[in-house]
Image 1 (cartoon, helix red, strand yellow):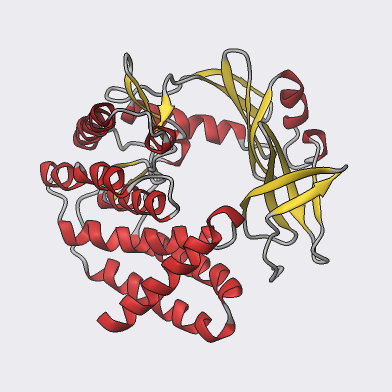
Image 2: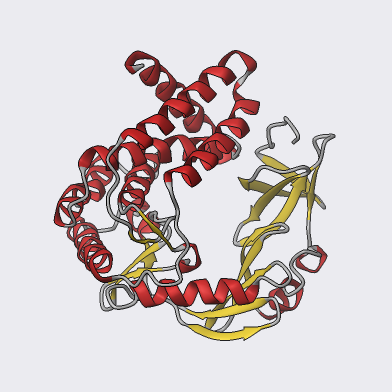
Length: 345
């Protein structure tokens, strides 16, 4: 892996693109924006940034044609891209993966669709699937907008709580793969290694030791019975519409897991939104306020939620330390977590 921090901007053809998202890899995949325009790209070993035309991503063979029909919304080179078409969203995936993604989405939609507004598959063609549009604004955008009334903010989160508790109580588990503490431990170790490359040799071992203690905390906490879990539940996956209520997207990650996983992940993302300055502290607290009663309604033990939340905070900070917009806040969060962990060890 390239041990090099991504620049904040890249000048391409005399235009200044802002680097917004970065992922681990060699060369390092990234996403850049120029106003509303999105391009995937790579950070090369010499520090230069290469932006890709949608036709140039050989691992996403459907992307070029889709991008010519609509607006590219996101692009993780070599992995996945989303294009907004006239009446649908299309996901371009790696060759041969579309069937599995579609099947996973249908299982997730069956589990969550009775309580949330969810996208339906509109078409499956080649290495892409098209999904219907879920109305509303993401809770990320809603929380960042100063014009959002407090009443609407609270209503959105109450609606999430009602829909989540209903889904966890009755969500169908057949066909869903399990996501265990062992699976999460592997992910935490991977992200600790990624982050360690960016925070300096003196702190790298402390970070890895902190990750091991987080894993031990997950292993010690008494597990809850497996239920339906979104597995990537956060404020950008939830949408609020005054008429349709609460919506949920990106359902192909769903799994059988401890329901504390989703609660911990959602709490960690609310803290991230506050840490990055996207939400005010009052909005972050209001967002988190429904998590405890939601857990209590489904018998999810608070220590278990806390353990998954700590793990999610570490994983999220490990990702955002790679990304220019959230890098400074992620550095602070990682060092704060290491200090707190060392005091509690």
